[in-house]
Image (cartoon, rainbow, N blue to C red; front, side):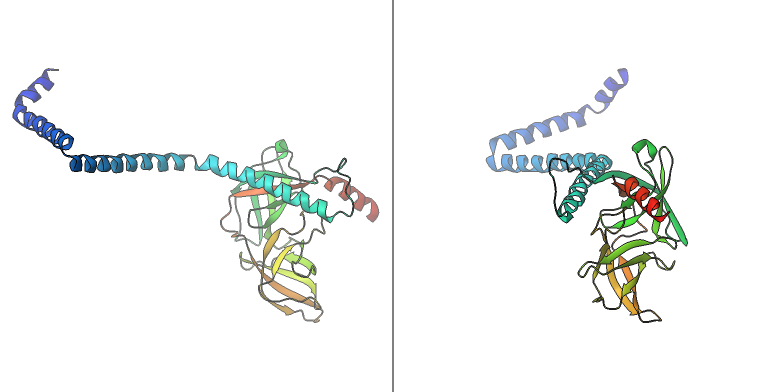
Length: 273
């Protein structure tokens, strides 16, 4: 306290000057409408800038929760889309007994591999979230891979950038289908093989999932035709497909569960015995 008093005594002239200067400014602003309006505008600009800065900082801190909300909303919309297409594909639907075929679950990638020959991804959902093997995994831009192993809280996904991956896809405009594989070269380009030479293939055509498996619904985006040629026997096309996904930059994913996958798998196994 004594130090504060000593400071005031030592600087009394300067402090008095500041006080009188402040009072003069107040009187000037109060007595002149022009100065008053300028002061108010400047104050609004200053306080507005401060509030905007705090708002931007607060928004930045909330990005994770907002991203989670967006992912959940995407889940809901994708579920509606996949299940509505399933209804449309049916020749007859009993609305009293119909149930949604596909369930969508949000997850995050915690380990991404794209430079190896057989790439595997790790996601933060497992059996505690009712995730099982052979569930499909996609992003908001397109197909990503298939779950191959699960633990209580995690699952591994065999990426489409894996030389053992084989997924049924098709040309969107003509429904000619083939198998999506990878030659182990570029993380941006995969290969579509076994497409008959009668198919009308052109550069820039869109490739989507065919719906001919129990894992992925029909019409999930894959990529576009970059170039193509006939195989050595000249019976089928070998097509290079540029992926919609940037496989080197992945975070949020959607897990697709076909509720009838177990029934379908058991039926196929019994048929093949």
